[in-house]
Length: 443
Image 1 (cartoon, rainbow, N blue to C red):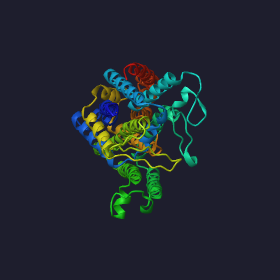
Image 2 (cartoon, rainbow, N blue to C red; image 1 turned 90 degrees about the vertical axis):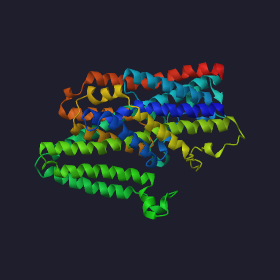
Image 3 (tube, helix red, strand yellow; image 1 turned 135 degrees about the vertical axis):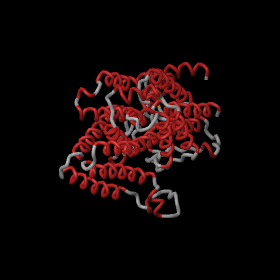
Image 4 (cartoon, rainbow, N blue to C red; image 1 turned 60 degrees about the vertical axis):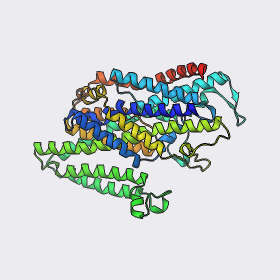
């Protein structure tokens, strides 16, 4: 039990570090455009990081918890993964490199699991409890097909989104920038497009709403409030609110003078930054929830017959067996609180890289980048894919830079960032494997 408590404490410390390491993701553009002072910006971001507790479910947490097969590892594996993730996060923060805390955690967890499999079974095959021959590399859930044709999961999907998340962010921010630029012209075409988009958004979101009858655990006695505050529905409400707000601005953009347009864009940056901070909190806090859930599952498996107190009564969901997950309320509350506290601590070296070194950011670019980043995070969270908020916003900033000209993006800085992204998972995995072997000597 002592080791389990240590893992939970370290996981929350990692969540805190994640907060100040990734604070730049949400506040870099509002600081660069002087919409908010640095202190106001971190307060703003931290508040919406914490508010995500009431918005998002636990889909990403479930994906992270199943990075490795919990029935085949021990607590030392998870401890090694968390320690390696903390070390890599602190190093990249010190160097001012906006690497992915998410991929650091995934890489550390997977690397320690592989090291454990090699230490226990070697490189040859071994007979599993299911009577089938297994190999050391199978301890990691590399790929699992989606249920009923849904989105597949596994480490390979997470690795694929190292490329896909920034590309989606870049494409979305590029398209939003083009939309805004055309909306500033005094022609009818962009306004017709905007009205059609607004109608399509309302129709799509209303069709995706979960009715009261299908809500598993209504939060309120009132049907209306239960539907309105269901985590699935809140996300789609937010998507609609973001798109409709930008659309409303596009309808009046051409009638504003330069000063009025800039003032309106700066106010919209508060909305887009808040939306991205919500996505950041919901995406990144869930990864720590997943690690804590995996640790409890491993503890129960390695201590058969143990009675767990209600405050640690965690059950991982299993769609194949029809088992629904259980997560005590203090775990998400602690995780969201830790990441919000970390965001309050800042992370100014990375703010400088994100806010000015990639490309010069104005209020116009800030709105486009943060809106695109937020929509990308909501989309990937809906698919239960733990993507990097760092990669997403960096891609979004590059996308708005491309609308000016290719040379507006400082590609030397960008290439350095991409190398950090590529190396994060393998370095974290190797470091976690080394930590695992060292810990195994003493534990």
